[in-house]
Image (cartoon, rainbow, N blue to C red; front, side):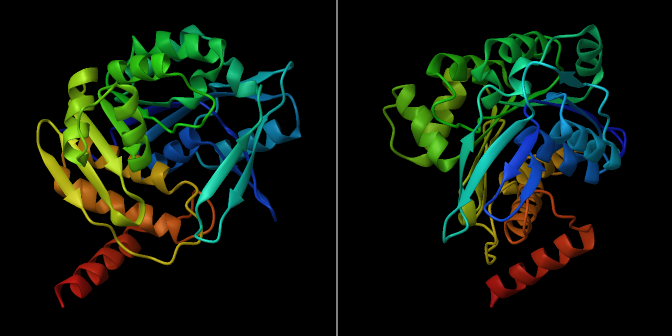
Length: 305
């Protein structure tokens, strides 16, 4: 098994600005995942595209300051850097209005991308990047070169089709869904089942994917890993906003699994990180490992009383 700092990852997809009612932050699920992986000691690259504008310059500067390679961030003239209007309801849950077209819809394939993906341990991608033919075509080529493919479904209506979604799931080695996405995809695949576990196994069989994780918000997650189920019932915390919580969860889970940690311990740790992110403002708060361990111990102690 690889040493702690020997893992390498490529994250592919949208980088953008999340526009909140009172402020704006740099985001995009692939970047959020890359940032959390980097904080876990993974050598991380992000592949995306920004516009030739101030927003794009600030994103590239930010990525460089995080010690993540921005060499694969393309700069285009034709389209602006992506922005998303984020609305947070009274429960802290987010909804999104995503500008189309944005520069990240037009990621052009290069030989350097192919080389980086083929040499990396893990390739992370989402479904949103497939809303445009150019980025979708680039993704499909890179998937053929990737060693271990992780799909974050991240469904954002109306920017996906059932046909493309099934194609992406069939190409993935690991699929991450939330509970709403599980039911939606199960319906689209005409699942005859009603239970959580039955539908997870049904999707696994339909897409020939042996590893699926379904998050349940404050109620934890279910991991189906090589024909066995693992459960975590969640770490309750006062939610500030949920932006990026699922991305940090996914990054943490994948890194720990690739480092040979047990599926159960990996799931527990990832759920704790996701909760701590939801209890903080923004998608990428810095969370020391000591704080994560302390949080887990405190919650586990209370649950035993």
